[in-house]
Length: 349
Image 1 (cartoon, helix red, strand yellow):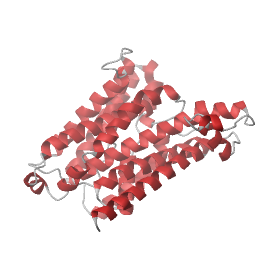
Image 2: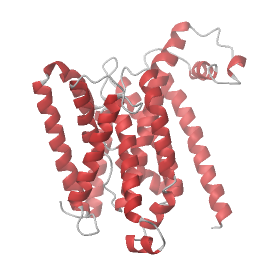
Image 3: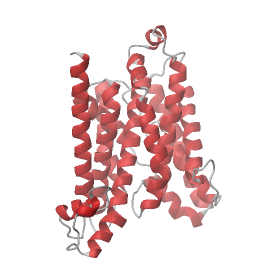
Image 4: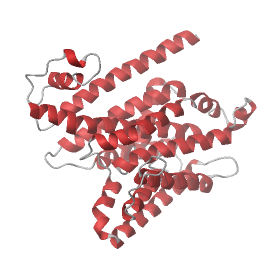
C-alpha cells in the first residue's frame, strides 16, 4: 500500500471514529430516567457551541431537561471519554513497549498506586495545589510513578520483561497497595467512604469542575504519546534492531512510562480505580486497524472513550435508580477477556 493511500485510510478511520464518538456523547447523554429526546439533546449541546449556538432554537425544551443535560449528564459523559481514552492509550503504549498483550494500567498495579496516592492526599487533608495540580492528582501521579517503575524493575530479567514476571509483579504490588488502602480505611474510618470510592471506581456526581481540572493535562499527555508511535513500531521489531536504527530505547521507555503514569493518575484521581479498559480496547482495536501505532494509538483513545461512556451508562441505568460503580461493569467485561488472553498465550503463571 502506498504512503498516500495509507494516510488516506488512517484519516478515514480516525474521522469515522470521531463522528462515532460525537454521536455516542449525545446518545449516552440522552439515556436516563428523564425522558429526553435525542434531537433535543443535540439542540441543547449545539446551542452552547461557538458560531452555530446562536442559530439553534431551544425555547420549546423544558428548563429541567437543559439542566439535566448540561449540568449533570454531559460533564459526566465527557469525563468518561477522558478516562476511557487515557486508560486505552496507556494500555496500547504498555503493550507495545513491553511487547506484552497483558500489560495495562490496572493489571500492572498502576491504578492501585495512583488510588493509594490519592487516598493519602485525602487522609492528610491536603488542599494546596502543587505545580498548579490538585494535591490529589499530584499524589496519585507520584503513587503511579513509583508503582510502574517498581513493577518494571522487579519484572526485568537482563534486557527482557517476561510475561509471567510482569503479571505476577503487577498483581502482587497492586494487591499489596490495595491492602495498605484497606488498612488506612480501618485507621481513618472518617475517610472510609471516600477511600472506598477509589477502590470501586465511579463517575457519579461529577460536574464540570473535575473535568476542567484534568482535561488539559490529560489531552496533552494523550497527544504527546502519539508522537512516540514510530518508536513503538520500531521497538516491536526488537530492541537491538531499534537501537541499530537510532532509537534510544531506554529513554523512550522512561518517557512513555512517565507519560502513561501521569495520564492514568489524572483520571484515577477523579474516577478511582477502573480496571481492564486498557486491556480490552487495545486488543479489539488492533484486530480492526492493525498493529501500526500511528493509527492504533488515536483509534484506541477514541474507542476507549466510547466504551467507557457505554459502560458508565450501563452502570447508572441497568438497575436504576440504584447506581453500580462503573469499575464493576468494566471488570465484568475485562475478567473473562483476561482469562481468554491467558488461555490464548498457553503459558502457566
